Amino acid sequence: MNSETRACQNCSQNFTIEPDDFSFYEKMGVPAPTHCPRCRRLRRLAWRNDSSLYSRECTLCQKKFISIYAPNSGFKVLCPKCFHSDDWNPYDYGVEYDPTKSFLEQCIALHKNTLALGVVNDNDIASINCLYPNDLAFSKNCAMVFIGWRLENVFNSFSLAAGKNLSDCLCIAEESQYTYDAVAANGVANCKSVYWCSSSVGCAFCYDCRGCTDCFMSSGLRNKKYFYKNQQYSKEDYEKILASYALETRSGYRKAREEYAEFIKSQPRKFAELQNSINCTGSDIIRGKNTKNSSFASFSEDSKYVHNGVTFKSCYDCEVGGETELAYDCITPDHSYHSIATITSWKNSYVAYCFDCHSSQNLLGCVGIKKGEYAILNKKYSKEAYEALYKKIVADMRARGEWGEFFPVTLSPFGYNETRALDQNPMSREEALAQGLVWQDEIQQTRDRETVAQNDVPDAIGDLSDAITNQILACISCNRNYKILPDELVLYKQLKVPVPEQCFFCRHREREKMRGGYDLVTRQCDCSNAAHNHGEGRCEKNFETFFTDRESRPIYCEDCYQRSII
Image (cartoon, rainbow, N blue to C red; front, side, top):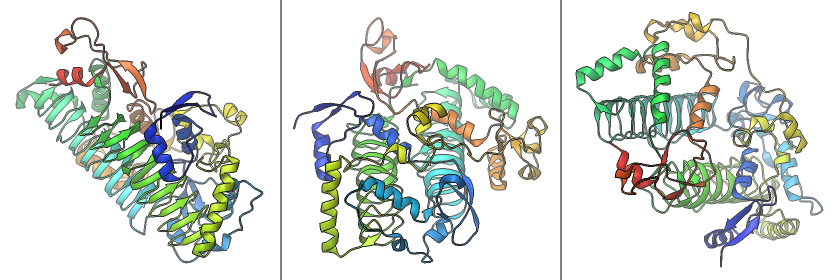
């Protein structure tokens, strides 16, 4: 089969479907998509609320807990422990399929009428002592962690697959320890403000330094020690320079951050981070194979348009996930096989259009089923009856143009401003409502309740008493209130870093900006160094990258970048 160009039914932009894509869609039993990759991703993201959290009461145990569903959402919610218990029966909410109505709308109606998993985590089940997490599993002593598993003593972080004693980290695929403020830093320890670094110890304010020890304010180093601003120093001189910044103080850390921002502007950045990968495009992929147009998708193979997860195998259009095979247009289909348009459904096989279903097989349009099989819209069937009705529903959906399409953005249970879609495709309240989207006017935030002014917080972490954990601070950027947790303070003291002056959300937003974007563009290498074997003038090589012309740093092709590292 040849490549085919189609016009997106949503934005009208052309997109290409390759022969391998058609093979995947045939394997999954779905038609080729009608939306371009970007619109497909935005549609999924509008159904994903990661970190807009609300105080709710569990419908069963009446205990307060943190939920992703606002009180005015219309959803009755369960805490994770009650959701996974035998104290309720999701089959009690089962309904008959109505062939005169849209199946997707029937799924969404069932979702709203069934008791909902209020927040996606396994605290008190497979995780222990985890506060305010969402999409977290198999972890211990964590707080404010979103999208992660196999973590211990981790705080204020997003998209981590392994790590201990971390705070303010983003996109870590391989275990790092005792590190503060890191992006895509794998196998690092005792580091501060390191970005795209690996196998390094004791580094601070470094970009793409690998195998390094005790390096500061540097970029593009390999197996170096005692480097400052990419220059070698003696141990004694290096330690004097580092001590002069007083990184254990707020003023010193602020100075270093501002200086690093100026330093890094002139340092080249590689067009993509594809380490030990074969035939991959996108970025932040380690040991990948045939994984295209993807970001933070390490250890994945034969996949396309997968983001913010690890170990995807033969998956397309997935947002978050791990150890997943044959998934299409899904949100967090962890440990599953053959999933179509599922949302936070784990450890399943052959499921489609399901919400919060776990350890099940052969489900269609179900909500909250655990260890079940052969069910449609939460109604049980015999194997033979299930297969017959399944075929009829798929035929009906094909006739309506629904089969293989994700749930409509306009029917999302979340306000557009609660979801990750807003970050990737910003719009105002008026613009969202004009497009038929939901907007949440009552996002839970606390302001003007601070009990101590930032100027009254001691500058040095060593001068800070445990009493700070009883105080309420106000973010210097957005004025949102936040607190320092006792275990979080212990980690800051161990790392000798000051308590942050911004709330978690502002800090995370700044780290996320470092990633560039999610839409590949073609651009030319910025290198003009004649010594890099391309002669006088600018290198003529083109490449696909997530970094547009708005990126302030020079973006280099692989050859020019390799020639620039030290």
